[in-house]
Length: 218
Image (cartoon, rainbow, N blue to C red; front, top):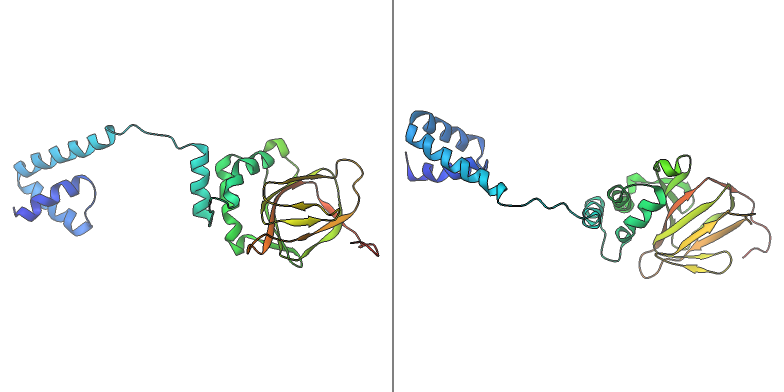
């Protein structure tokens, strides 16, 4: 057996050879008991590598960051940082909420609701069964239609910002609750900060009714 073939034995034990090299090792080992013994030693050594490392379960936060990164860009100040809050809002685990936020940069995941407004729906967990949940993104400068809520709505800004009908400015991390009592019709305008160019909300509600914009409304 050549010196090169001896060097292949540890790689074979680690499963790191391509099909041709693995076949060459198997033929040589089948023909030489001494080589078979040497390979068995390498295989035992390879097995002990895993035993020497104690398994460490990733934290929910680390798992969320990873899934958000896989789904799409999520810088330290990006939407992925709100995974735990979105999980609570929709009654999901943090990993699933992170994956949802990771889809913000996936155009095919979104559906058009109105001019400048797109939605990405998600089925909530059992605590909020029957609620309408998902992400709503509004293009910078676009106005969400004049509407009223058909029940309580909770919205969390995860990206950008907006100017509400009552003059309030909201930005990342702000939570807006509407429709608790008599809900006055209203709208809002997306006004994303910096170069973001849009506003994205995580929303849990029970639907809206679009109504005519009254004359003289801001």
